[in-house]
Amino acid sequence: MALTGASDGSLYMAVPTNDETHAVSISRRGPDGRWSQFATPYGGAPGKTDVYAEALKVDQQGRLLLLSREPESKDAPFIHSGYLHRWDADHWEQVGGPLSANPGATTVKKSQLALDKNGRIFLAWIEAEERDPTQSKLHVFRPND
Image (cartoon, rainbow, N blue to C red; front, side, top):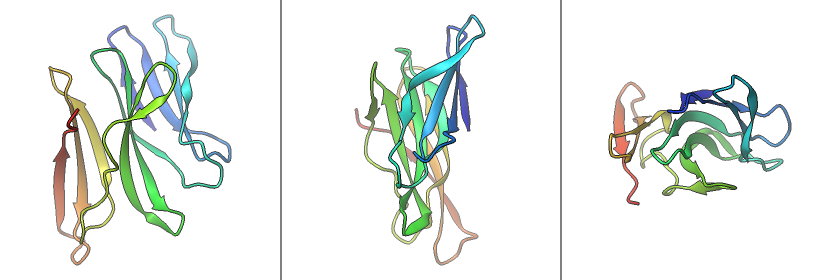
């Protein structure tokens, strides 16, 4: 589950859907206090891998950003990559490429999403060394858009 607030007082919450689509559903609580479905669920492909919401943020233009984590394949369900998407009026638009673990490291985990005062996106995640899981590295990434 992920949660964020917007400058207009709205709250956004991402939770897994309770069906076979393996997607994340986004709900919005408006300033009036009512909850409603926001956007189309992200990642709804029957029979594919599960999607996990890592973080939500609202950018300076009021667009919702979703940082998700997904298994790279059904055959390797414990190896995850991160994906950043932005809601663009009527569809989810991917921002940058997948955030996969570097060679010799385990899965991307404990991802964070932040925006600086100019609205630039920053992502951070932890990778553990495959040979020595007690050794972790922090990676910080900024899309080139």
